[in-house]
Image (cartoon, rainbow, N blue to C red):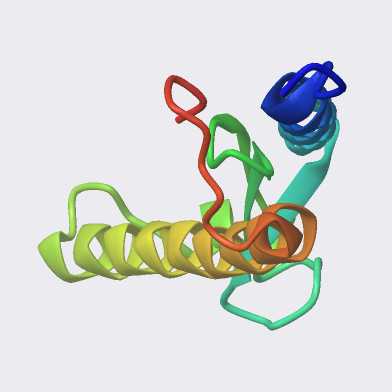
Length: 121
């Protein structure tokens, strides 16, 4: 085996370099998800007077809630049915945002095919 230098070592170095490159790409995609804004809507389907808007990032961290101007006029907080309607609108907007965030996550992270390196998630 006199002429056998490097052998598996060279292949292992390449494998380690590829793993490091994938890890760097995954970290960049994670950072991008944290910086992206996702808007969840309910009530009117588009941002408008009768809409509840939830702002979150691509990792589903909610950053804000906004009520259209007519929502506050429509809701009587002393009326149990109105409160329940508002709660439903908020939940619907959050779920819409989560769905959009899931789609973004799949777009950004799906290319790694579940390669999930230990400690990444």
